Image (cartoon, rainbow, N blue to C red; front, side, top):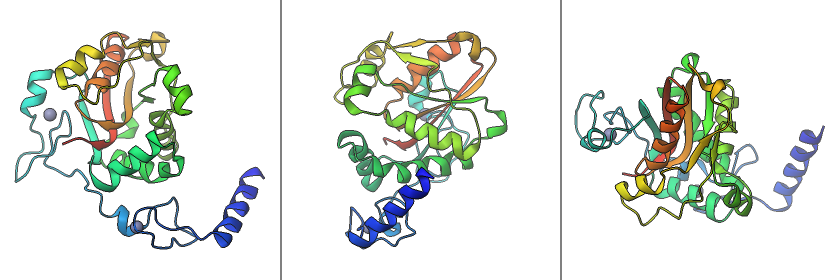
Length: 244
Ligand SMILES: [Zn+2]
Ligand SMILES: [Zn+2]
């Protein structure tokens, strides 16, 4: 009932205030979800093979998709593989920034759409026991009012029909912003940042870890590391975007 009412209010608002694409101002049709037009969404750069099977870093040219890049050989990530929908550029990066830093929640359907497409393409969901979002520190989550990784994981869980475990990892250390740090400093920065709430639930499980962006992989790796130490048998990372 509430849903039907919301939908009706949405339609009424569309009539009063026609929606326009937030990037190119083209009017959006009533049936179009979100705030970005299909033409602008189509400018996203999907990550297609060949890419590193460990960290989703795309390669140019014709290479075996099973290859592992030099970066991964050095860092030895704890997740067995990572997949990312798109390069963290242009419309994708802008949608993420507006959602995260301007709290413009209506970009979520677009980000979730990219994430779900990639998840369906690359992951065998019959082998996955749960979907786990990368947590934010409670103080940060309160000030942002949401955790974008949790919202994305929620949409993914609904789409692929797997359980969502949003509470299993806790962020116990409020890490300073990582944007100015290199890969190694980010790893050091993440030490002791996470804790596990219920290790018993994780024993023998295979999980998909969800975040918005894979930049150096330090945050995802810290989560994967603590999941494995708590008995998880396999962690696959999945993100909307990959910094390249
Ligand atoms: Zn547009
Ligand atoms: Zn790699």
